[in-house]
Image (cartoon, rainbow, N blue to C red; front, side, top):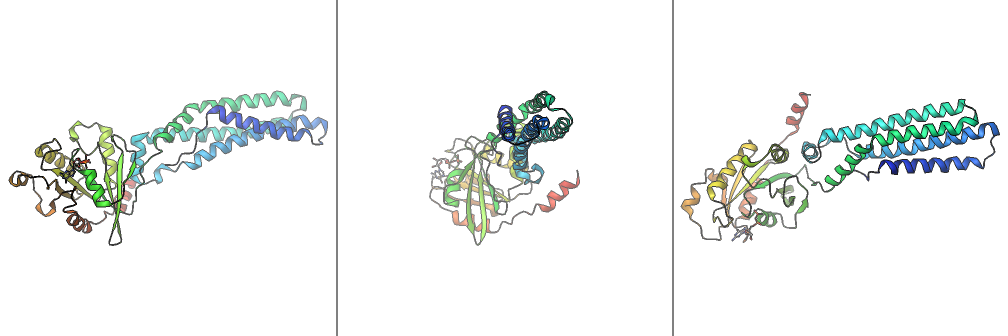
Length: 341
Ligand code: GDP
């Protein structure tokens, strides 16, 4: 998400005050009746300072997209990463400061117009004091937005029109090897909460259909029981995207995990991704394996393939299954969700 560069309170104040001074100085050389000149100069100074600071705040507020209008995946992502409520609170504070500045601008402009020029300097100083106090009050909100900017800098770019396949399985079963085999070029690597190597996204086109593969090393690769609520939320965010799961097993067990644990993980993931079809891939078939042993863990033979991601063996068959996968229409589901509010 694009959050612009976030200034500190001092930076906002310096910019506003120095622009105010410049604008005021321009009036000094102009011919203005003596009794009006002092207050005109101070009015210009205060109004310019307020306008410059308001513009700065507005440019930040406008640049941050409305969170409610983002795809549910991004809403969840932002919530897990920085917290949607904190984000709204910080933006709300900037809006508040904008409103107060507009108020001060009007108030002091009026005050200066009504006062004699001898009092203009004192009134201007009072205005600047109040402006500084407003901007200083939003220091923690500016800090938060700066933090959010760095946390959200490398968000994954998701193609919401593509059919999306989420890859899961224990570490070292061959997930990233498969991702490369099946989607060719180097995958996009982006940040993803609770993943060791971020999220990896590969794209391919099949029969004019865009397909997107997502691998989340460090997330969908360990027992769900060990996860805390926030980690679970990081998985749930993927639910808004997944049209199918490719679950990879390593029957050779060279990954270091027994097939039984791998099977149990698959069951847990199936439960989380309720109703999303799972394609079961037994990988590393180039290594000698015990068929009878493996078959104990096959309970959906029609959706099970034996492959070697390393050799590219079985990739064609995976593609054939993927061709039959329909993109899940979630628009209805999302509208129903909205009804609750
Ligand atoms: P990930 O952690 O699940 O992404 O696993 P990787 O794709 O990094 O693979 C882990 C290790 O298994 C690497 O050394 C791969 O070369 C190896 N590997 C992956 N697929 C196969 C396969 O089909 N056959 C064999 N023999 N090794 C494989």
